[in-house]
Length: 428
Ligand code: PMP
Image (cartoon, rainbow, N blue to C red; front, side):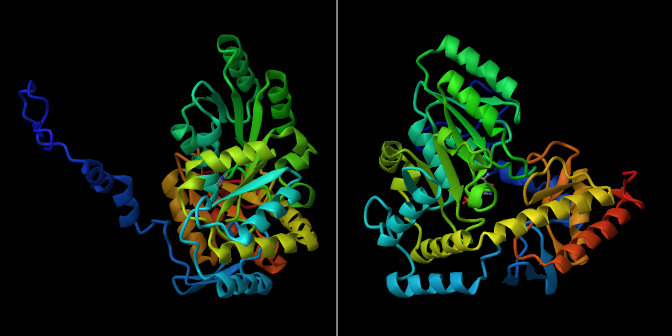
């Protein structure tokens, strides 16, 4: 190789093993008897499936019309004519892309307008946009949690918080999911051992698989007691829950006590991108230090205009949030009365527990054939033996569509022994 070293094991290794390749892991991924091969052979592979037609609550997959019960399009605005028009007008005015980062040539007046609107909407001093929600969380943690600091992170936090922890120079401690007593023990220990460490408590505001809301009041209490900043990832909360859709802190009237809130545009806002809100100086610092903001191209004009149009609708049509909450209650009750376990869901994310991974994949396939699309979620995203169908709802689902979802789940649930007749859990 370039350094003149032997590609085989170390020179002192007499066994002369074949050279390791960077692609060995690829071979292992596809090896016979592995999960990838077995799931495909059984024709149960549920991922990367193409949607041929997308009309909000309806979609066409494999030539078959299905009810979409697996999208994060919570307000049902992806196909709204007003939103489409706004996106098209932005293309006409600004073109298709910004071809540069916000820092350099990628700031349009539209980006500034959206930042102002969102800061006001979230009742915070300032807002900064990123090109995805993932980049928002990763960039924020990299920027704000530096050497000598400690991030206290819920074990069920989204992968992009994990990514932020990995690129941050701070140390991370992970507390058991929603376990504020466990968090307290870490806060006490770090405060005693390292009184100079800056502390950031990071949690999803709504957990993306269980649909539960974080214990914001207790977290605020701990943050205040230990002088930590609280950071909420409200990807599944802004435009979904809280006063006017202002997210998880607003459910408890605690927006002022939360230092940083992030959100995404890939769910309620029918677009792509992300944002963070907080104090003006903190946000201005993030603008100058978050790599994912500074060194990546900005949101394209159509994506920004889409969000602005959705924000207008969110502010003028609060009945969408009411309908969404009503649908969530109806569906949770519906699943429970059929005998399904939906964990402790409190939002339009309703997990339906199936069990073992292969059973979940088979369930996914039969459900699709029964005319309903939902997402199969398997370990490591959920604990072993707790594979689930993640269902999620939008304000535009009709009662008739929701009935069809429940009835498809009932049929397939009985068929697979997940439930038994009479609304009981099944033998499986
Ligand atoms: N946070 C959470 C909790 C999420 O579920 C997601 C997306 N699934 C993200 C952040 C990332 O958002 P985006 O799709 O905008 O990258």
